[in-house]
Image (cartoon, rainbow, N blue to C red; front, side, top):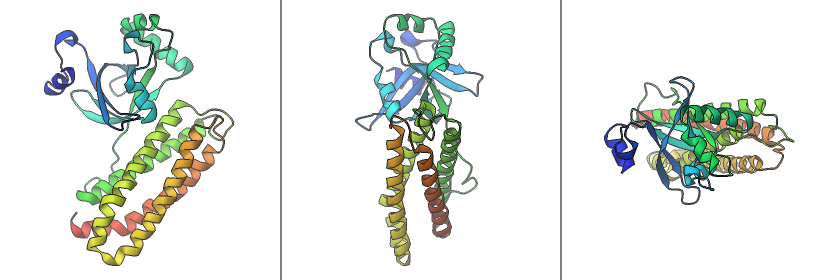
Length: 278
């Protein structure tokens, strides 16, 4: 009822939550793979343009809420504020940064301090970092514009992961990798996997029907998808390695393969898509 009321009244809710400022957070089930939406209180980390902060309080229960487990497995989430809806990467704060943020939360909403007092687990503080839509396909509609937008987002996220690797003490080993790098890397990998599966199952068969002379090109793209999927799997495995050894090298290798793949795909497909008016 809270979720339905939130959406029906552009973020305003009644009942016991009347007057509260809430968001709706939609995560992907770690086991089910299905969307899971919850209303949450939040604070802003900085001004209006800052990240939103949410706390995995579960009212002081001894277990983290399901949505927190979900975002550790699938960091890309959807945020609804009532005024807008956008994608974000969920990054739990660590160490001194978490303590600093939680102290700020408690100053503004003392109830979270009471929840912490009820349990021995450390209540996680999660920053919802907005992922901005790229302008790669700006001014172009149809599938061509969507393809450019998705490719632009993937390139931007991969560049961010590379930047985080350079800043991360354990990016090349032998230290454990931080959650900031882990969450952004997983968000990129899951989005890339979904994009390639969508192309393989829908876009490429459709285009091959229209342009049978391009059959060999699509076979080549399929082979490249398989190589990239293997490199991506190795990268995710390295995320969970105790010392993060070789992670930086894997990022660079995947970057080279993916950049070449996206460039070649755009060179061949964009003229076809534009000619079809798709």
